Picture 1 (cartoon, rainbow, N blue to C red):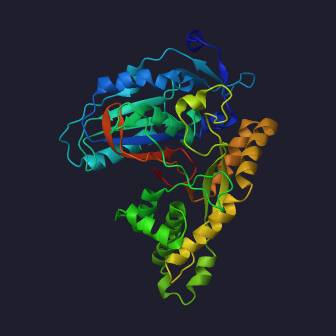
Picture 2: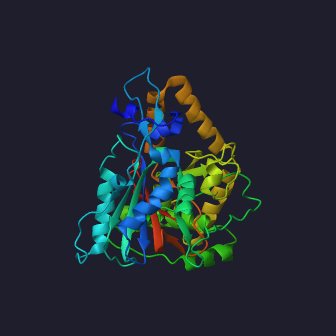
Amino acid sequence: MAIEKQVTEAEEPVSPFARLFSLPGLDVFNVVTIGCKIEISDSTLVEGLKNTLINHPRFSSILLTGHGEQKRKAKWIPTKVKVEDHVIVPDIDPYIENPDEFLENYTSDMALSPMDMSKPLWEFHLLKIKTSYAESVVVARFHHSLGDGMSLMSLLLACTRKTSDPEALPTFVAPKKSKAKNACWSMVAWLWFIVRLVFHTCVEVINLDDVKRVKNAMNMTINDVIFGMVQAGLSRYFNQRYGLETTTHPRKTLDKICLHGVVFFNLRPNRDIEDLANMMAKGSKCRWGNSIGYVLLPLYTKPENDILEYVRQAKTTMDRKKLSLEPLFSYGFLKLTMEVFGLKALKNLVKRIFGSTTMIFTNVVGPAEEISFFGHQISYIAASTFGVPQCTTNVVVM
């Protein structure tokens, strides 16, 4: 094959979860939108990627899945990368009407288009349009087989610098440890779609300062507050959707509604964001790739007069899950299923589990100060995951 002729180094095996994320019908990838405060130079972006991204073997290798060939194992095949082929600059009118809507439609279209498996599975789209929150936008797409959120955030760390010190890498807020946090976990806030789900056509911007006030007043985490907000929103949605306010026994009616979410946990020994060089170092305990487990989370949607009851229920549920061995068990169970029964059985199992849930929660910690992306000051970062069996479009708040 032509691909095999491009090999420049030793081939590397593909992890079970990397193979899972590349299976037909379960093709999962991440889309990261980076808004910048100044117009982005495409030449600067290309040079920056040449000095950082392609130095990692996963981003300079082709994924050979071997689908349909039982005797052929999946491999990462190193290849020569032409960065210019991975940086896409579409011809867009800079004064286009409704640029925010255009950006939303553009990222949605990316979710529906397949990635070219004949080259490394990443790409950057440079949109030279001014939106409500940025002067220009970079939309990056990474196949999930390349790594999980912790790995990709460490990659972002290597591509950014502090705006106050252009030579210094950004620092990240270390997660505070409490008695309830004795297990590895990292919970996410997939907020944007939930607001759309509840209000359909009305988009509400939630002030993070308000979330912090509730967090401090009730002595819990931001993730607990956000999870409680999701539950409260779903409860109100069901009240409006099924007219339960006029029902004599709304609680009995809602008792029949059973929803579950999936929360992903980081299984690495070190829960902090690591420098990319440390993660790639030989013998490092901070593994690159997909090192994640999951737990199934029941969603509390019963009607309550006290809105804070949803937050209390969220904290109780999450504290119990943090102390359980469910994330480790789920990871081991999926791995055992693949080794014993093969990829087809693993695919069916994963689709059965995740297809029966309503939404996904997962997140990673972000930088503690303003940062720049190859010299372009960042105004915001938003991430989404596409290809999961859930009907939701999940937006990560970092």
